[in-house]
Image (cartoon, rainbow over all chains, first blue to last red; front, side):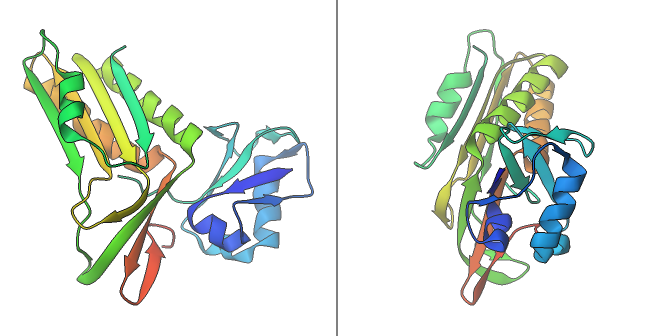
Length: 77
Length: 139
C-alpha cells in the first residue's frame, strides 16, 4: 500500500510516499504499524490518516487501492 | 456559484477576491488577510514555507465555505490559500465574505479562518536564521 506523507511526516519517513506492507487493515492498525516503522511519528502532537481525501476514523478499513495519507498536525492560514 | 476555493503557488490578489464576493444585494464585505509575521516568540523569522495536500485541502475548504453559507445568511464566500515559500509581509490566506448585514459576514469569516486552521491539510514551516520548525507538529 502506498502512503503519502506531508509536512513533518515527509521528513520522518524520508520521502513524499512510502510503501507499507499491508492491505485491508484498520486505520488504527495502520497507525500502529507506521509508528513501529517510524518511531518519530509517536513524538508528534497527533497524526491523522486520510483515506481517499477524507479524514478516516480509527476503525475504518483501509484497502490496498485506497489513496492513503499521513496527516500531521495542520498549520495553514 | 456562491463559493470560490483556490490554492495557488502564485501571489494572491486581494482586490480580485473582494471583487468576486461583491454582489448587488450585499451590504458589506468582511475580509481576513493572513500575512507573514517577522517573528515567532521573539525569534526572527526569515521566511515561511507552505505545503498542501491539494485535493483534500480543496475539499476541506469547500466544506468550510458550504457550512458557513448554511449557518449564516451570507451571499458569497471565497477562500484562497497560497503554497510555497513566502517572505515577510506576503499573503498566505485570504477569506472574503459578503452579506446583507455585517454581523453574518464577520461571524462567517471568523468561523472560516478558525476552522481552516484546524481542519485543512496545509502545513507551515517557519525558517529561522539558525534552523526551521514545522508549526504545531510537536507538543
